[in-house]
Image (cartoon, rainbow, N blue to C red; front, side, top):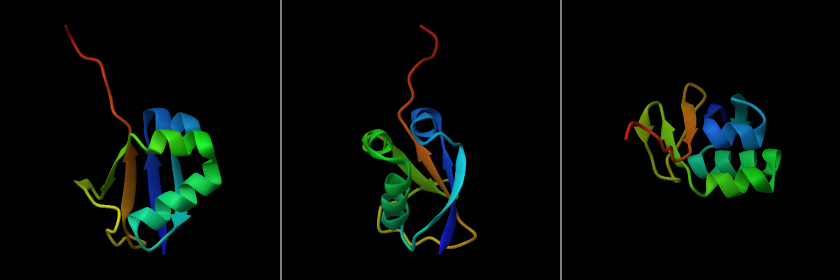
Length: 81
């Protein structure tokens, strides 16, 4: 399966792109392929990220398909004090 992947904040910076299309039948397979494509720095960022599919938080064994969008969301800080 080929899945659309959207990368945000530090994940986008580590990968050098905001979107890509990556093979994998599960979230875990897609993330392993992404780490292989983008390298160790991306892998380090990935360890801190949440992963959503079509707007829902999912586990690594979640099945994905060609109509799905996988989002990699690093932790975010900020706001008013």
